[in-house]
Amino acid sequence: MPVNVASLPTVGAAETTLEPGQPQSALSEAVSRAARRYLSDIGDTPCAEGLYSLFIRELEAPLLREVLAWHDGNQSRAATALGINRATLRKKLSQYGLG
Image 1: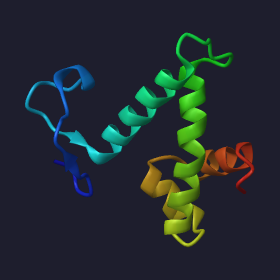
Image 2 (image 1 turned 90 degrees about the horizontal axis):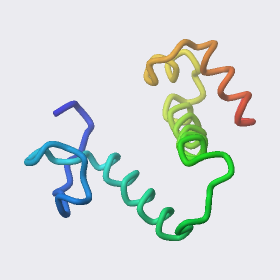
Image 3 (image 1 turned 180 degrees about the vertical axis):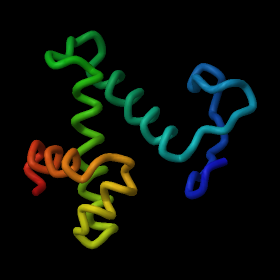
Image 4 (image 1 turned 90 degrees about the vertical axis):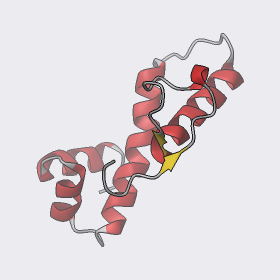
């Protein structure tokens, strides 16, 4: 298991796409719960921008904000931690009004 990945017990076979016996990470489980809750809330109502775009937008901005804060605003270190180029980080920060 990678460093800094907490495992949660799987709740049921229908709620995971992992191979049987593989634990979900805490992050994966949180995203799964959020997706299930969102889908339950909207039912059959279509999502105008598409679910993928909505989830990426909703996840990416807080991720960028938290990683940047963790690295005390140092964009180079945050970009390295995220595994992206510093210029890409700056573009995304601007896109979300974070920079």
